[in-house]
Image (tube, rainbow, N blue to C red; front, top):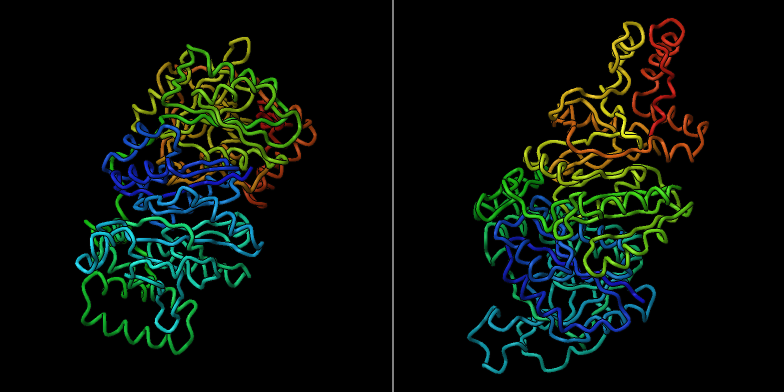
Length: 602
């Protein structure tokens, strides 16, 4: 069965997006498994709760800021790839489904030739959205063509829509190869994205689809048009015809595309035209030209106009409050215990606002069979999603994959050897809200016998090692437990239980994938410190931690070897060598005899 992801980007287009989703109900999905994905670019019109309430089965990805057409679709494609999509149907949120067999016909065309990479249908102006409204009779509305295949005029760096403004008389009903596909609706094979990549984020809006298609054609794939099926398009609903946004991006991006791909003669003509437009053009056009010459890929907003960056709204809406990420490697029994503890009534888990993502990191002792009852129950709303890597890709890559597949405002990373104790989840969310999502939080870890476990640390330094070993100041180098019964600000927290708000992830980034395991918590803490983002230890949120369960199953010798490689990656060769000598001397002469291998923990 083919897996098809239907992806659209929403930016303050609540009404259009809801109408699009309503029209999507008519789409037949014979032989296909569908997933509808809405990428929201930090809308401020109440789009997310409205869409989530009307269509709770739709996955809404919140980018946290306006990332444009290119960034939004890239995020949606990335999410769909993790889901395992065979096809991506990219379609504007101001489109409406006309033909119920749209998807089947596009897939049929795509599969008629392995080198067909993209297929687009015929596109009509939605009734009432024609450019020349007075030109047509009443019965013509809904039959006026906006796109029926096309070409790209590289002499003028402009896409040409075949049949535009014509009342459809059936002459464009065939299926054929085309030079130009409209980004308003296109079915893309997964092989295209795997070979060519995604959209270029520099474009933000306009001409990113032409750049994408140029790369596709150069790689040997074909573009196809199927005129037997169609959609309606409310043309230019997102930006408005002749708006500041249109002026800016159309002017700037045409220069980017032309100077990248056009012939020398056309490039000269573009520069000459840009000079004239810079003198006599509208303000946003002039700014677009200036930014192109300065290499300043700024942003433009209908209200703010051209600017270096678009201000993120103070309040960003998410479909869920919390996403819990779990990566299993050779700990299926413990993973089952963790999942069971999450879904206990007293854990604080709320199925209306929370989700769980479980990843099997390879085929060694997978947990899928042991959590089968929860996966089956997820169809009735228990909110658990399952992923699988064919082989063990390591700690950071595994958890990064669950982060990318999460929908919540907060992301809680739990090691597979954790168990949630009463109110553990609700306490973490309560304090995350208290800090307005501006801090990273860690829970209090205890051993299975409920005795305390060290979980905070200072960033490792030579001075810290000297204080720990030679002066006997506990916690200067190795882990320690904050003593206060109130949230404590710390320099670092182990990642066995770590809550990271999405707004912080957008600033700091994902986990460092330069190591297979170890030091990812220390490296992330260093980045947080550099950006002055606080970490708080939350003593009221309790979690059992079966300390070192995963590394014990790797084997002590291999784990220690991975630890050394990770330490060298974090410190650099020179500092790592120097620090190693201090630690070795400290073992022999210091007041504390803590073994270096104590860092072999999670």
